[in-house]
Image (tube, rainbow, N blue to C red; front, side, top):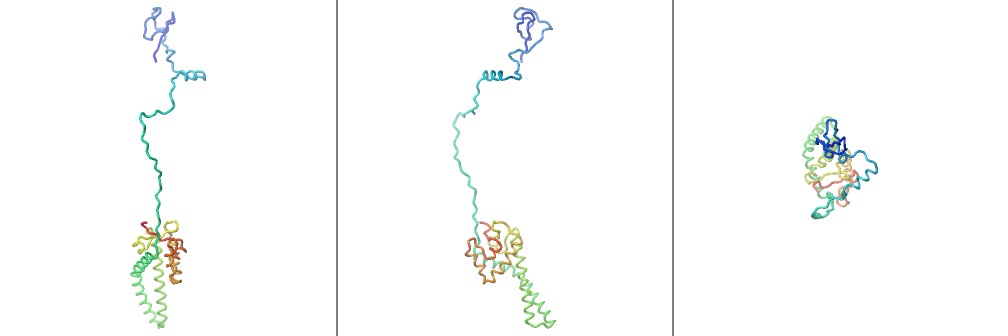
Length: 233
C-alpha cells in the first residue's frame, strides 16, 4: 500500500517521496509523518451498513458454474446387472459312478487288511477250538466293522475337508455342500455317512431318490441337510 504525507501548512496530501508541498511549496522536514492513504486502507470489521455498501459496490459475480464453450458428448446410461450363478445338482447316475470309484479306492486299502485279520481270527479260533460257525461270525463282524469305520473316516474326512469331496467325486467334478452352498463340518458329514445305512436298509431306495427329488437329494442328503453339486458349474 502507498504511503502519503500531509502538509502542515495547507493540509494538502502529497507523496511520501515529495520534498516540497505540491500546493504551497512548503518544504517537508523530518517531523512529517507518512500515513497510509485513506482510499487504500484495508477494510476492518464492518457493520451491517458497511457490508451492504461494500456488497452493492462490488461487481456482480454469477454463482452459476461456467458453461463449456462446446457441448459435452452424451454417454449412454447402462444399468449394472450383478452376475448370477446357476447351481447344477449332481443326478443319480453320475453319483453312482462316483460311488463305484470310491468303493474301488477304499477296497484297495481295506481288503488286504481285512484278509490279514481274517487269517489271524481263523488261527486264534483254531487255537481255542472255536466252532467253524463261530470263527465265521467273528470274522464277519470284525471285517464289517472295519469297512464301516474306514468308510466313515474316508467319506466324512474328505467331504468336510477343503476339497469337499471324496476321490470319486473329485474325479467327476462334484462336491458336497450344505443347503446354503457352504462347506460342511465333520459332524454333518458323519451324519450323512451313517444315514446311508438307512438308505441301504430300504433296498437302496434312499439312493434312487436322488434321481427324482427337486435338488437331486438322496435320503441321506435330506436327513443331513446336504447337497451334491457340480464343483465347476
